[in-house]
Amino acid sequence: MLKTEMRQVKAVFRAIWYTLDMVVVEVVTSLLRHGARAFVILDKGQCFNPSCSTHIKAIMRMIEWGAWIRFKSQGTCHEKSWLMDDRFMAIGSANASGNSMLKCSEAAFVSRNEEHILQHSVHFEEMWNKSEPVDLEALQLREAGRGQPSNRASAMQICNRRAPAREKAEQMKQLQGGRIPPPSAESDVRARGLAIMASPDRQQ
Image 1 (tube, rainbow, N blue to C red):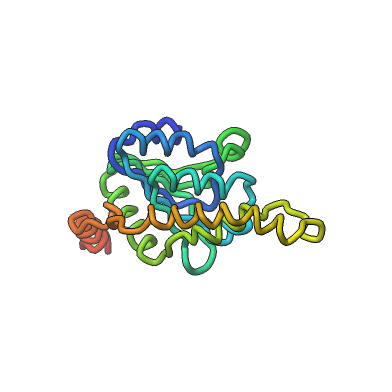
Image 2 (tube, rainbow, N blue to C red):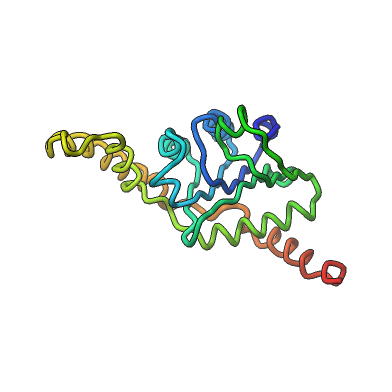
């Protein structure tokens, strides 16, 4: 269901994920190729000690295609939420991984209700503003050294593997630089969402 809804995105895809793998990359990059924008907040710990073997590769692939990726700065980000344009949202237990989507029994709250979507848009903006940019060089170096038996690999072998990673990371850093803030930060969306949450009816 989530992948089907993702394919319907026309303008903006926003997500907060604990972990991910290459299963979602095909859908996200397809959206980007067709002119949509993607903004994703991830758990920092998972990015450097991932439970999914293709977690880092998936992040780098999405950045290459123009996605905005950030880390939650403080604590663990165990949230799994999805916003498709301003028409659909989902919050539940499913990770953005093949294991969750194909093998596990998961539960999710889904809604097309405008109030729900506006409230979660405000939440996403607040999370985004508290998050930090991806450290591209650190990720590339982490990926370059994964599975490497350091006691057997020579310093020159390690250096030769990490040099392309540093070059690629610098290219990615330049690609990420100078981009505009996410569309969820637009003042009218934030104002509407905050007005709904502060209304007298909500406080009763």
